[in-house]
Image 1 (cartoon, rainbow, N blue to C red):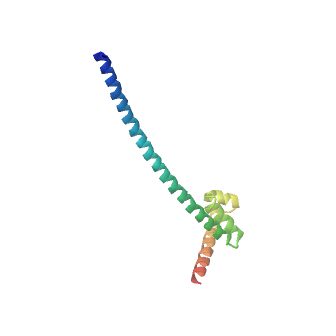
Image 2: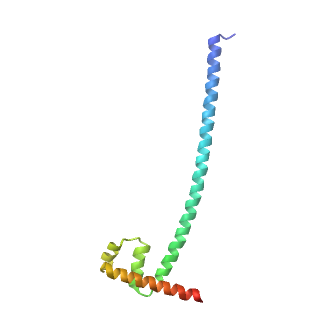
Image 3: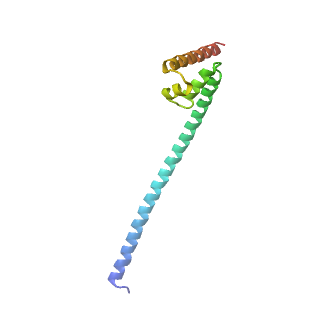
Length: 120
């Protein structure tokens, strides 16, 4: 028959093994929950990226519909390349005030075109 200290050691070993198993199971459950949350976020990000890609395509199409090449370049630099106004002015060789006038004219033209298309 085993001695009392041996029995005690065996029982403690079983207890610690069971406690370790519970900790591991809890950690595994936490990892599964985190993985599910990551999968959900990834799906949401993919949907957002698709929506943004469609919007960018629509914006590019609108810009391409402009007749004046200055309008096209300006709007593409601003809304496709997200370039700051100062950089656009430098790139196009225009004063910022003139650039704003050009921008307003391009937006007005697009607004007029939108209204005309939606009437028919």
